[in-house]
Amino acid sequence: MRDSPTYGGGESLYVGWLVVVACFLGTVAIFGVSYSFGVFFERLVVEFGRSRDVVSLVFAVQTFVMCLGAGVLGPLVSVYGVKRAWVFGTGLFAIGLLGASRATSLVSLVVAYGGVAALGMGILYVASSVTITWWFDERRGLASGLASSGIGVGLLGIAPVARHLVATNGWQSAYFAIFVLVVGLLAVATQLLVDPDGRVEARADESARSRFRRQHEVLRSVVGSASFRWLFVGWTCIYLPVYAVLAHLVLYVSAQPGLSSSTGSWLLGVIGVSTGVARIGVGPIGDRTGRPKTFLVSAFVLGISVVILPATSSVASLVGFAVLFGVAYGANGALLAPVIADVYGTANISSLFGAISISFAISGLFAPYLTGLIYRLAGSYWIAFVGFGLLAILGAGCTVRGVR
Image 1 (cartoon, rainbow, N blue to C red):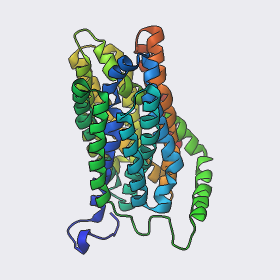
Image 2 (cartoon, one colour):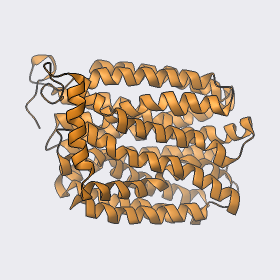
Image 3 (cartoon, rainbow, N blue to C red):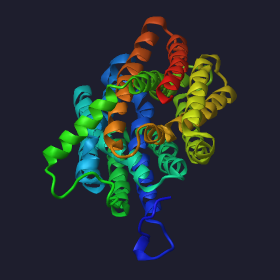
Image 4 (cartoon, one colour):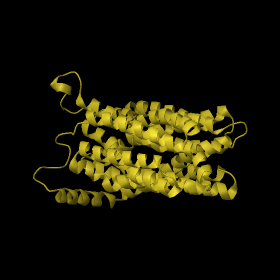
């Protein structure tokens, strides 16, 4: 752990742990909102009278813009400081959610939720993921896991609440309630955030243009390396099944005999719990056994879990899938920023993490839409799930080359 100030100048509480709580709240808001889209999916198909592949573009565009925004706007965190970037991202996120609650067409929903809100989510995503690495060294895996476990809490808490609100009050009212919740969570997080003195790369005697130029030069040298290209391709493949499952699981489950969309929503909660537990537990494991090695094992298991998903149809087998998928995804996701820090260092990590996040943007843009399209053409999800699961296994192999 690094030598840094304690809360209130005393010896009892290391300030980095307050930052962990702030980042935890950020991930609750970002991914609780993003990954709860599945509970809106069926209602939006009926509301707008469009096919699954077309409606899935709402989630696809949101994921693409969020991750692309992380790549483009990620340097804001280093250049202007965590807190300023956080406030800016929160404002965009809130405006977009409010717009989604007033949307009257598929296009307006894509613009508000998939555009404005997603840009804010992208900035917060980078801040929540990389800020931890500035505050911790030896316990980086644990701290990152605790912060990113907010994804599981968000899925467990927001998805079921959203499903209830969609069923009782309609999808627009559900988005307004989520808007209120998100503003509250992020307001608390803002108060807990502390800019890490000496680690943010902005300097008083350096202009913003100079800082961006310096960031760009470092980023260009890393992005041009063979290791980065292997990581980029690998992580694109690994996250294809993630976005396919999170977007279509509720509809897949509702098509099984005797099951309904409420079962699918409940399974998202199971994934959330499993993900949260894994993200907390994998940190110390990765710190001891090696974070890249742990990341690779989890990516392989993730791919296997999605390959076997089409063979599940009973509640028991679906719960087994949800637990396995959730644990693998949680372990994998918790180690993204720590692996980048281990391979390239922390000096420019916000820019580097933003750049690698573009791989998630590609996965998020194509996986939900292609999954819906394959379903419409083939009448089944098995081709998409098996195909994307195998690509995730291939992605784990690519990552091996990237971390060498």
